[in-house]
Image (cartoon, rainbow, N blue to C red; front, side):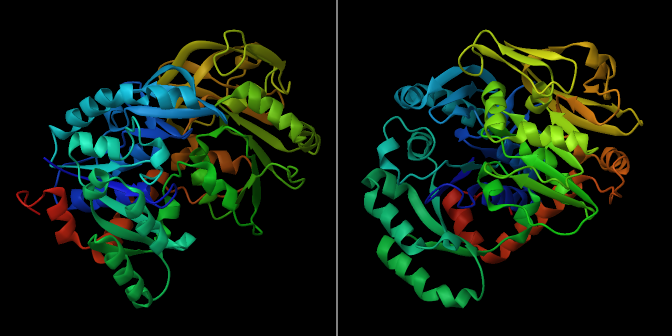
Length: 489
């Protein structure tokens, strides 16, 4: 079995996209490929067929491999609930909550879990492509590490180190990583990749020579800026901080950026629509007065983000929006906020407590220790089919649910819609990926849809990225490093 691990000189250097692209590239060459990330930190997650959850990036990478996602592809998932604590998910199941310091002291205990999942994947494939987290140069986190070199050395997996030239100082980043790594970690790096290059690649020839001279590592390629990467679901909320461009489109949709926003890739299909202007509204800005639709997204901490929403004045903006005749959609945690009250008596998502909701749907939610994780499918009231998943804690009850918004197979009525039809909510993520559902939804708001299946867009983007990587990377060298010499291309 062959394997290669992509580690980076920092977060957001493009490891997830490169891993997905290589997954598709080698799958297109006829290999059985599996993605793997030992430890991930993200509130954008996906549900596996067996009712577990993994990072969104690993689900996309599984799609690139043309295989169903498995909990083994991301055995440890950390879902931040505050600046200093996170929910810990092990092999798809919630295991509790730990503060950052407590987790640093206990993460080494999970190494064997990580290695068992890696072996479970490796036994049935030709190649495992592993994605690191953060950077191995964060040597203050090296003790007990399971995300980068701790895993690579324990599993005997060679490493390619990725540098992001778009953010600058890539020569120093790679040379600095070589300088601070311990000798065994340094020896695990078998080459480097420069990512996100714009312009004439020959202009960086001297830079590449300098990196080879300073590190002694082979140059595995210079990857251009991959425009198709913008069509893949994002995993980190850092992409939202860059904003979404404004233009004069027919339908204006606003999504407030909650402090623990989760699964915001739900709205990627809307962003791709020609007649939809989708804006993520950052803290400190009012919800736009000309919005047609405001979407309250999912959140990892409903009560905390309900309070955050109020500190931003977005509750006042929302009520003004409704008075003007606007519409509101709540998804998952956003759905819970729309009710009369949210209670967390057991302290599931933070300190025990309760708060009044926004009160625009006649229902209330009690957070419970049981977590719902399952794929779902069904139809809208207009009969448009969708598929998606549920991923939430809490039970919502009340008269509003008697006017359901969706119909699940085989469960029946789901979600709620107000008597005037202008406020709706549901627990289902991924609703807008289905072209028919999105077309019907947008028609109700006065906008046309291209009706394209979003999954087809993502699949085409993966092929485009794979083709670009095939041209940019030294594939013979990568095959040798990964141990693919004995596997036919």
